[in-house]
Length: 206
Image 1 (spheres, rainbow, N blue to C red):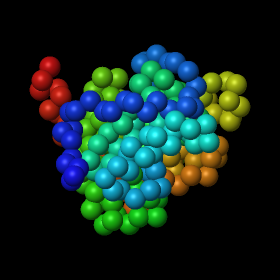
Image 2: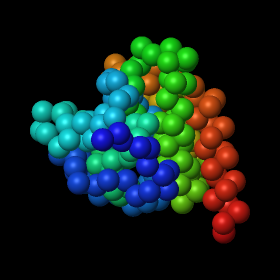
Image 3: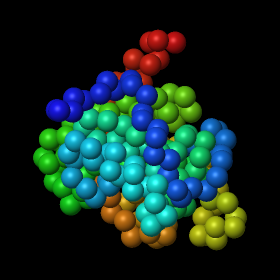
């Protein structure tokens, strides 16, 4: 049977809770949308497969959501801290997307449905938690992000205004991982434009 894309507003499937996490947090701690690529093809069932993988101790990581062109899976609630991209686990809402860091911009744009789905889910959190619709580069992230004293990276606490970042940006800023996802080809401009559009719609509904 052919799998049809589910409506953006549909609740994410939640039958595959992630094994790895760092416990609970307050919603007020969520200041960043963190974008990832799952390093898998975007085919029907991709998001489900990644969510199932996150259930395993061997997975070595987790995210709040996993998304593909067709569906969304919630692996951890907003108030559970994922193993996503340290040191922004506590402060980040992490979205894993089917795709590869090596993909070109044109290849990513073949999956506009996925990008649109990710942007909608991100916009909801940006609306709820008052996260600004802006993309942060490495320098901007370092200036903005609050680092607890016990992290020992040598940065002063920032204003924690928040924004949208990639795993690659976090890796470059803090060198706690070597991940480069979702890659330089990921169309951040398209993602940002979509989130802004969804935010306008959400504000009209107030």
